[in-house]
Image (cartoon, rainbow, N blue to C red; front, top):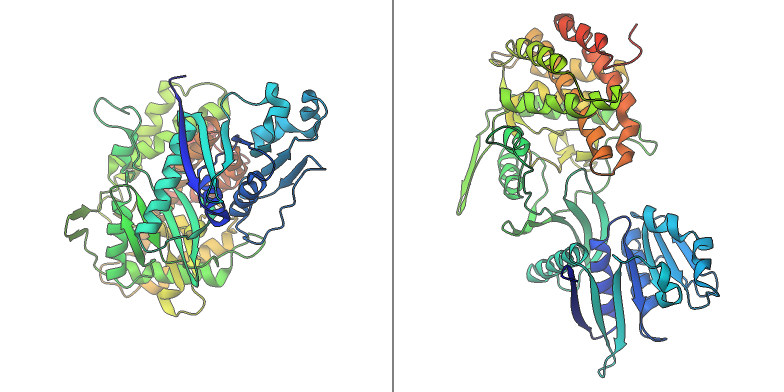
Amino acid sequence: MNDYSTIELHLPDDAATQRFGQDLAAALHRGDVLMLKGDLGAGKSTLARSIIRALAGDAELEVPSPTFTLVQSYQTALPAYHYDLYRLGDQDEIFELGFDEASSSGVCLVEWPQMAEAHMPADGLVISLTEADDGGRYAELAGPKEKMDRLNRAMEQRRFLENSGWRNARREYLSGDASARHYEHVFVEDRDAILVDSPALVPAGPMNSTKSYADIAHIALNCTSFFAVGEILRGGGLRVPSIYAKDLDNGFLLLENLGHDGIVDADGKPIAERYLAAADMLATMHSRAWPRTHVEAGISYELPPFDRDAIMAELDLLVDWYVPERTGGPAPSSLRAEYHALWHEALDGIEEGEKTIMLRDFHSPNILWQEASEGSDRVGLIDFQDALWGPSAYDLASLAFDARVDVPANMENAILERYLERRKDTALFEAEGFRRAYALMALQRNSKILGIFVRLNRRDGKPGYMRHLPRISGYIRRALDHPRLGSLREFYIRNRLIDNVE
């Protein structure tokens, strides 16, 4: 087959096999099936154990061989299912072991796949292990190009680590996000860091006659923006990760680990003190004059504007994705035209307002609490590559209407009032104008998010985001309570874009 490729590797010892398993774990996606072939003692279980431990983020995790149970399951970052089919009596028995569900819901590692060869997927990745004369082993990998490209990318990550002074680093899967970015926790002796893989994005087809959505909405296409914006923020005294190593051309960064302590508790509820501290940080940030550009050898970066075109492109996500989800069909052209007209009218009142660095996604997943620090340094920032130059009200709305957390109305109001109190002595700051901009940006952001979360489900096969829709809809109802948003409120209610309006 033209789209089938192979790779051969020499693994001189068990440590190399374990590192290879970590590299494989970094490349896996939900639905992948790895067929591990080789004689007894060839290293299949060693490799499977390393993959599972990397996915679990636990180098000491007990991973027994499923020789007698035939299958063991693990609730890791990606659900993992470890099969050993050596004792399988009949090929069809594999279905009694839940193979169909496992191979669609998680990652399957299958030792002795030839015992159920008729039921192995044609697009699976085959890894054949054989002994080498030096006491190590050879690994031959074969699979479809898309899967092999992922594996090659994981091996490029390994080379980046080695070239950055992190040779033989242990890798543990950390997380991904709604984008194509990938994160890992890496360790060498007593050092640890966060590996960021941010491959260059190829924008989808044009949204209009000349530009894509990514162009219009100013979505970062590579990790240069993360580096440049981070340097601007660091220069202004904000707490961002130090960069230990970078390869901007290939999209790799090695960052300081700011920890895992966020601004929500173990049950996912907001910690009021930390949300208020984050509002304090924004008030301090917005009281300063910031450069809009970062220039150094080989890099010149300017923060793009959150202009009318970008705002409207984001708002169209609600019409393009959420309206069809609600109604079962595409939005009528009349609805779109009225929606645009009302939004253009509403935006006319804020474009001359205060502008500053707009972090864009300033909410709980992207804020790491630094308990040992003081003041603004307690608020660690980790996701700012899509930062823009825009209304100061936007980031406060992003925080107080946290898309991932139920922020009750009284806490949201406390966050707003805390911010206003901290800004009252800022020259030219006008509180009532800020309140209106805050409500409007909350409405704009949450309208966009409704569309994005539906798109993640419909287009990208990520249904988990749908559970957030009731919260986002509730935030929209709250934002629409502002007295100067009456026309938009009537539109959202009349077109049933929100529920349970009294």
